[in-house]
Length: 253
Image 1 (cartoon, helix red, strand yellow):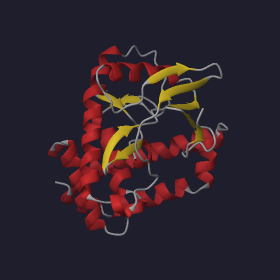
Image 2: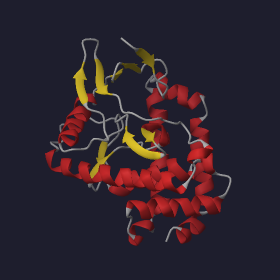
Image 3: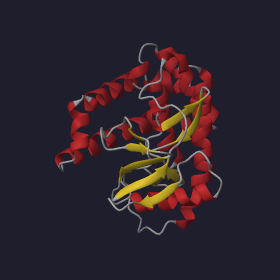
Image 4: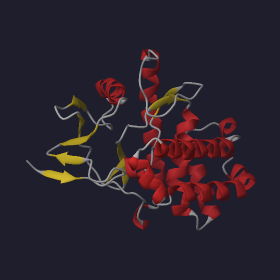
């Protein structure tokens, strides 16, 4: 069988075998698989098919075709990719909101539930979790961070990852233009743009707190991220976003 280790946040722990991906399972994996089974059965061909837990205690899902990038190369830093990513997130939310009525409160999630509950948030809708096919966002992978929450909780973080993160800090005007493009392509209402910066900063601070908490509990993956400078990067991004708060809010209207 063809075996290949895949790059990602857990180096050496994720491998592709034939047309499946083998990943470490966690206490939330069964809840994630129940969700994936539901939306896959509903016709969402842009998510992996869940195949359960193997005899080694690892989760098995189908392999999603396409290329994945930790940071988009210059050839993909264009409006078409941004529009397709926002459209894919919107489509995901349309499917995931149908799952809310099935929640029992007994589910286990990696990240805490955020109110008001409107959809199932992916939690990390970023270039490294979206496959690209023919220059367009195609499939969504890695659902460890799945959790119930409001649409904008997912949208603001996604726009940050695709447009406002450190990878794009060179030109604030272009960042703002592409942020507006992402939000408009998703279909964000003007009234929901008013708290964009406040909500994004809150989301990033929650992420930083979670990373630190997990590292203190002995999670080596998160400690590796911290040692690699992720906390400093998020702090710098928050400073950058807050510096241009009023300019961003005016520009995305």
